[in-house]
Image (cartoon, rainbow, N blue to C red; front, side, top):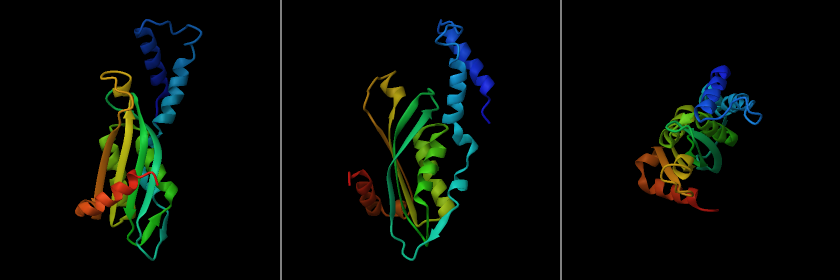
Length: 187
């Protein structure tokens, strides 16, 4: 559970620490706005992926499923600055599939936590393997990190790509390559 009062107090302290007046007209309600914002963007702590990955459909063929370009926004645990981008998920079912909106919901749960992209990629892959027991899962995240673009090295437009493979995708590099090419393509 998010402690809004602690967040509001922390926001007031930051405003004072940078030399601003927290009672100034433009800032007086800022701690409340920040409290509500953190409740929204950190909602993943109150959710479990297995809760959203619990609706299945039986399939007669185990044809691959690819869900591309799932937008996400997360917060870097090192600087508490946003990183954002697209998630791409491929899996090969083993007799059952999950509703496609559930893939996006799984991404959202992990994105709405203090996070590093490398862990988020693995967490999504592991959650899907655990919940739907497919033959394999491949997750690729492409993200821009504002801790690299607006501070530090200041390289806007640079993207970080992370990949997690499980099951048959881990065992068969040619299968992994085939699906990575499909996930990267514009079609």
